[in-house]
Image 1 (cartoon, rainbow, N blue to C red):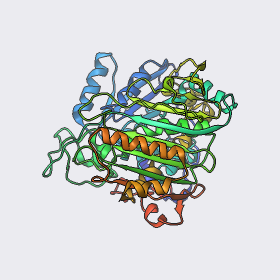
Image 2 (cartoon, rainbow, N blue to C red):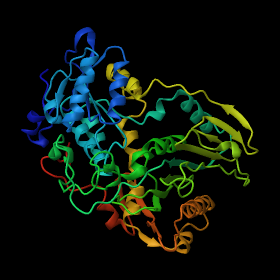
Image 3 (tube, helix red, strand yellow):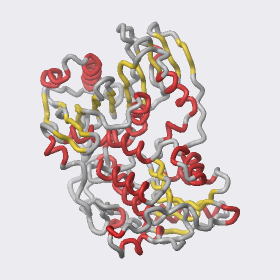
Length: 493
């Protein structure tokens, strides 16, 4: 069966129904090896490379990065391991390479969807980093591409690869501590100011800026650092809730057994403590309403107090109002999930269950082979069930992050009284907002002079993946983006 390249695909009509299923049938390398390419590896992509190097029968045969310095470093490191890799700056050329079987992508967020869709069209399986998409539209197109072309596409949300966490989730779902009352996710991770510039900055000479921007607008660089700080700019990033939130929110949704988007969402937050070129909130509370049990997700980028270096530690409060000293999140930075039940709670970070008296009742043993391992197993078996986090699960969990950001982005600065009026009657949200205020006060931030942004409650039609009701016109404009030719995520994949 002749492999259809991306360029061949683009020459025909989308309506022609070309290659509805492309099984993993072409000849592999020596000893039935799976040949992997990694796209974008300045940061977390190196984790993908290192994971593949440890899996028998997998060879990293190609690397791609729009930064020639990063690319040269990767080739040099491969050479030091006595491994030959092909080097690409343009992912489209990589995808025309018939020798590549799977693609791992850890590019900036705005490239995730296009790399995935194009890879599926080229007959390659994909492991895509978090967040899987830059917006909700893209995530759905990724799911559609995976199904249409019979591709294995894994969202690299690695918490589902932990056997201890699987056991802990099962323990909660069996009702061992009674019904779930509230699920809390956290990312308390120090983020310093990205600085402020007075004019256009120079793009590093090693970077092909046209390729780096890809689907995003090719605008003058208006921040000190091209790399990493793209997280805090809406055109390319999704803020901290999009950066770390997919991991924790995936677990929150998993433990509740929810296979759809929440009925409503609202977000409170702001960029506090410094004046810089960042656009995304560094302190945020997002509330997801599923109609029965709420999910509350908190972001904090400032330290415990002004001038400090430590981060806050959440101490869970039982339904009886007892402060659970032993329930703190660990290790630092404080990212994780706490599930409060009627008769106790489970810290899914430390994998320990407690009763409402703060006594440990069960401990779960952490054990994981890593997400790349399960991905390769599924590539070999061609069974979606062998993936720990299929692209559909990744899309839904990432969409929660996007929903929270959309509420924030169309919100308005509001007084504490206005915010409390909106969340009155919800003791868990009120408790979160009280800690939110105390945290900012300890960092010298007064919400009276620097008000928080209160996003509206937005109603979501989960089947259509569109907002409806009040504020929906504004919100639905942020479900997708305007794409820059030729880097377009198509309506029909």
